[in-house]
Amino acid sequence: MLTSESINELATALAKAQGQMTGAMKDAANPFFKSKYADLSSVWDACRKPLSDNGLAILQSPQADGVKVSVETLLTHTSGQWIKDTLSVSAKDDSPQAVGSAITYLRRYALQSFAGVAPEDDDGEAAQGRKPGQTARLVPVAVAPKGFDDWLTDMAAVADTGTPALEAAWKASKREHREYLTATYPKNWEALKAIAAKKAVSA
Image 1 (cartoon, rainbow, N blue to C red):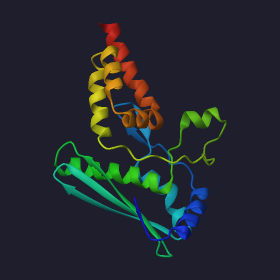
Image 2 (image 1 turned 45 degrees about the vertical axis):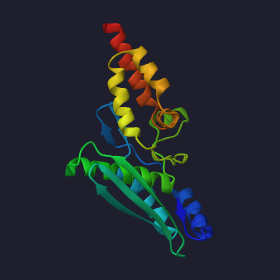
Image 3 (image 1 turned 90 degrees about the horizontal axis):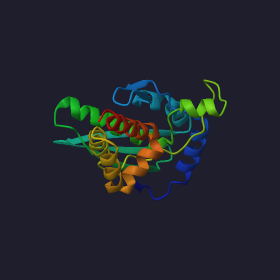
Image 4 (image 1 turned 120 degrees about the vertical axis):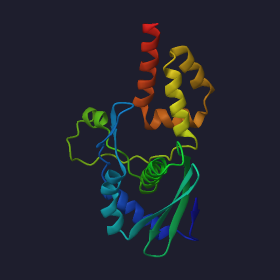
């Protein structure tokens, strides 16, 4: 991550903005895991006004070189102070659709991370007795580690062969991938284990 020489005014403004943000609503469907997630539009809805009201703006610049797709995110303040970083992934192929999807994915995760927006956790809201519309507790969202998407796809394929193979692949996986999945998408990990367990029963 790169920053301007000083970020004191930016940090103060961001702290105020985060105090005004709500969680991003999970209104987009993930057909693979039969779950919902907060799409790019929802994340923007959660942070745009608080950022703007506190003199903050986010600029995102995408680049593509074959299947390698990158998005540079710049968080700026009216004082001239700034923070920026770049996040990259490999698209499934170099078609416009695949590259466009990768760009949207990167923009969403980078925006969540820079602004400090977390998706609304429906189960968590119910457990804590919150009613719809109340402000959710904000939790910093980490950016997906490099290669996470491809790893998750591979794990899904392994899960289809049964629990022993899934457990072996899990132990052999990078720690950062395991920790990101269980911390950010615990339901997805449970779904993988359920798939593997069903294979064992059917066998």
